[in-house]
Image (cartoon, rainbow, N blue to C red; front, side, top):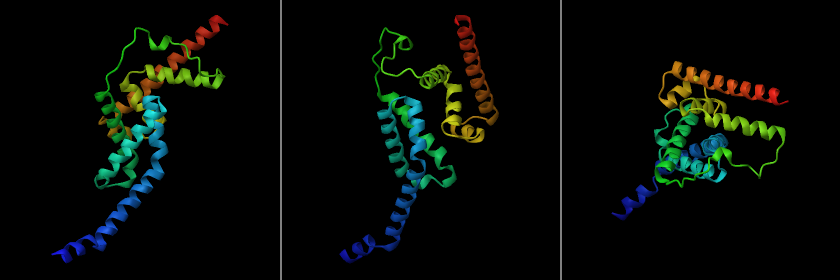
Length: 187
């Protein structure tokens, strides 16, 4: 009886399968960790939370690696896991609400270089977009996904995605024009 158990444990095909899965996972992490973390950071705006979400994403990816049939789809597969993981974060969290509007708080920690100011302005404008416009835009800008890939990830029609991307860019353009007009009037 023990001999049959020993033979099963040391079966070379089991070890080979385990090593193959480990190699596949390692290459997946090496190739996509930076992109997944960058998208997580854009979603939450907090480095530590982004690290946690990224870690949980890759943990779930390890568990479900056998379900990834096409390695070319790995990035969108991981983004989908990340989005679900980010949503779980809100299911578990109870927010403390404040009477102070967050956009009226002064940022006393950031330096005020022109690039940082423009980047802050752009992030703020993107954050003000409705989620239906913001999410496809971030997937395209940060994730580098095509309209077809975004449509698949968000379970939408490609034309719907392209329309939302168009509207998101127009809303950002309008906001920039309003800011430019105000700046000229004050200058």
